[in-house]
Each structure stands twice: as structure tokens, then as C-alpha cells.
Image 1 (cartoon, rainbow, N blue to C red):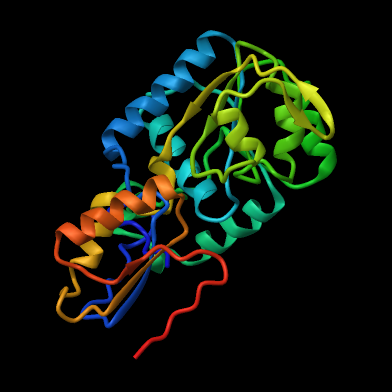
Image 2 (tube, rainbow, N blue to C red):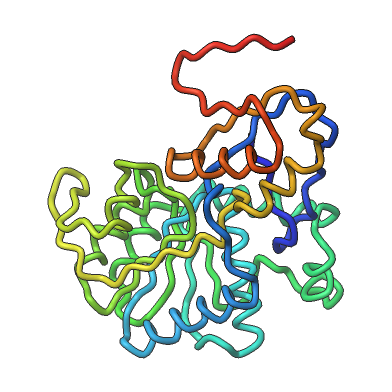
Amino acid sequence: GDIGRKEMPILRDPVILDDLDYLIIETTYANKIHSKPDEVEEELAKIINETYTRKGKIIIPAFAVGRTQMLVYMLHKLFDQNRIPVMPIYVDSPLAVAATNVFQAHPECFDHETYELFLNNFYDPFGFYRLKYIRSVDESKKLNEIKEPHIIISASGMAEGGRILHHLMNNVGNPNNMILFVGYAAENTLARKIMDGNSPVKIFGNEFEVKAKIKTMDYFSAHADKNDLLEYVGFSSPKRLKKIFLVHGEESQAIPFQGELINRGYKNIFYPKTLDEFELD
């Protein structure tokens, strides 16, 4: 269902499957358009600089595989270009540390930009001197004692488990801090509640007032936006494509996308509900 995104940092563009008979396709951001890369870099740099000036901390809930590596890549790039201040950056997730090791072991999968910016100059895109990978629980706990401005990237992205819960508990109440969400969060998850402006929120059974500044940037998501999804469907003719199934998306995203496809001549477009059954020819 997930088709991936083109022109993203690190990995090469996904391969498109064309001339299909049936298509099951995600609709996570089927009614949204992602920001352009240069706009995202500028916005991220602004967020970091403003929080640094306030002497605050930046807490980023992020999925361990893919999202964390992309964030580290962009932070490394901004740091090398002197667009963000010198401040500690911590990746606090055992799975993210292990996943990053896999990325580092397979540079043959990287795209042209990663080679141009880093590998051709013998730089590791996932390692620079202000970045530290946290492995042990004791190291993780000590991060809460740091008073100077810093960045913590920690799993899980939807803040439903993992070390991020401790970092949110210790930092969500400080108005100088920034909680930066960099991907989709499902309804009723802690991340979604904070995104939607709920306060107080429950963490480990206790209520905490949300006083920190909140920002969401969906650019880092691995999910394609409306334009990418339409382009992908367009590689299969309406005359050939017998059925399209819209999945992995809320109704507010899937239903408008369904209308877009109908306007382009596609038929038999379904937004299935649990236990729906379909027959394929």
C-alpha cells in the first residue's frame, strides 16, 4: 500500500509499478501537499534557532527506522552550513541506533545528493561531533539533567511507548521548549492529542499541562502526498485498472482523493471498512 516518496534525502526514489489490474494504495496524505525541501530546511533551522535563543530544548518523537535517519541527515547538513547553532543532539532509541548502523553499512542504496554532500567528501551522513547516540537506560535518564539547549530525537513517533514518554513528561510543561512532530500520528495516540492542542495530557497515568510550543512538519513522512499518489495511479490506465482500494488513511484524506480519481476517469474505487470482502476477477 505505501508507495514511498521520490526526491527524498538518503535513499533512491522508489520503483513505480505500472499497467496494473488492481491497486491497493495508501491515502495517509491523499488530501495534502508536502512542503518543498528547501522550505523545510529553512523552517527547521528557524525552529531550532528560536528555541536556542529561548534557552529551550527541542524534543522530537520520531520513528526509529527512516525518520530518525532523515532528521540526523538534515541536522548534519544544516550544521555544516552554519545555519543552526552549536548544540548537542541526542538520538535516544536503541532501535534507531541499530537501524542507523544498517544504513551506514549500505551506502550503495543512497541517492546522488547524499554522495555529493557527504560520501564523496568522506563524511558519514549519520555522524558528526555534536551528535551522540544513546544506548543505555542510565544515559537516557541523564539527559533530563541537562539544562543547556539541546535536541533529543526519540521513539516512538506516535508517543505511545518508548523513551520519548519520559522526555515528554519532563519537558512538555516548559514554555521555552519545543515539541516537534515530524510525521503522521493516528487518532487517540498521545502524539495526536498534543498535536491537536489537548491539555492536560496523560503520561504514565499522570496529567501534565502542555505549555511547550508545538509544531508539526509532515515533510519528513515516508508517506506520499496527493500529487505523488495521483502520479502513481496515473501510470495505470483507467481502461485497464479494474479496482482501486484506498487504505491507510482517514476519511478526510481518502474520500476527496476518491473524487479526484473519479474525475480522472477511474472507476470501482473503494474505501474499505473492516471485514469488507471483495472478489477479484
